[in-house]
Length: 130
Image (tube, rainbow, N blue to C red; front, side, top):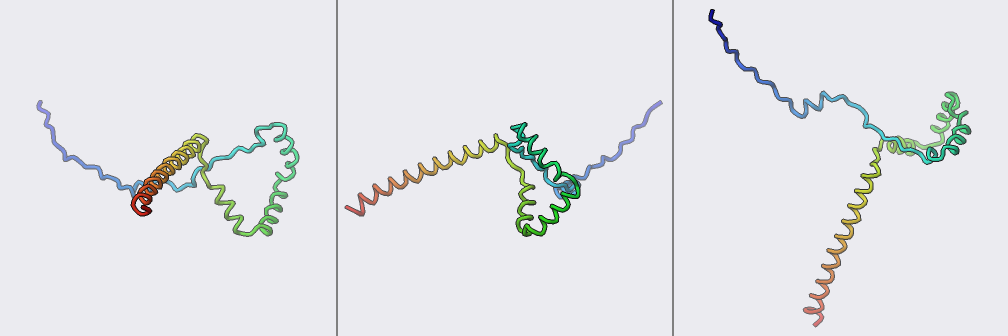
């Protein structure tokens, strides 16, 4: 028995554009990094402060403090604080790398400026102040 093979046309896959891929990604808020407070380093101090602030953790107290804060704090400060909470802070390693890059750039740029200043000073003294 002969088996007959039928050749089927090859289907091509439609390529997705970047816009299509971006539309499929769910919209979510940027991930925030928590900043550890200095209180966590000193456990006895942290326990003491948490004990003092425990009454303010209850819902009615928080609600009244929230209302008082809305009245006393201007909208500008509330907006600035909410924007500051969305900031993604760099890690210590990134901070060190970026700081060292700025320092190196400052030294290199200062050296270029000083060499140019020295050269122009010699040129002006030789040709203009002769």
